[in-house]
Image (cartoon, rainbow, N blue to C red; front, side, top):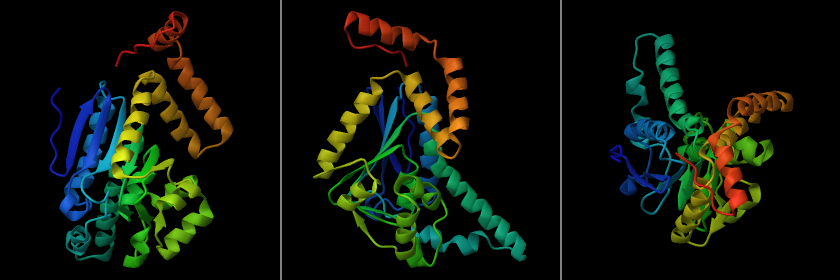
Length: 273
């Protein structure tokens, strides 16, 4: 299969596991214009490609991601230049909305996305991993909501998603102070699922988890993600109604037949892409 080629990302696919690697190591994978767009494009590719069953999001070099590229941030005034204040506000709102959508693409992708985090994960990088299904880190990982130190309000997902992971009080503390959180504290807070001693062990461990997911029914995995995302911000009754509709449409499937047959025959199931 020919894989898409990107300027700021490296992409691989092996046995159902796609790895999207941030690939600006000389800039600590700071997110520039191209990377924002290409993250969305890569997620759309993963979503639309049946051979992809699970995605790992990682970073090349010494750090996972240093957040938004400051050169890009510095160009904002020029990009929204207009004679009228209302026009400038509208242009800036459009830019912010598009950046938000680039990261929401991680949630829209029906395949689970596992973030493998080492070194710095600050500012926009925390927005990025907050949109992933699960987060894993090496012992050297450092997390922070750095926008406050630039006199900014984080605006592409952290303040909306992080409270669901670690609660309102801790999210507010981190957002107001910009302080660093190491891997041990991130685990205690519930920000990450697990931590590993080294970046190498991190990738081995995350690939093992991804392989376990890739062995399951692709249809059921997609359904679980859609149901969890739908239910997160809604009432229990609404979530129950949604999953009832989803299963009414999808439960009686070839994957169900294969899972039952595999259990009867005491073998591993073989699900089609």
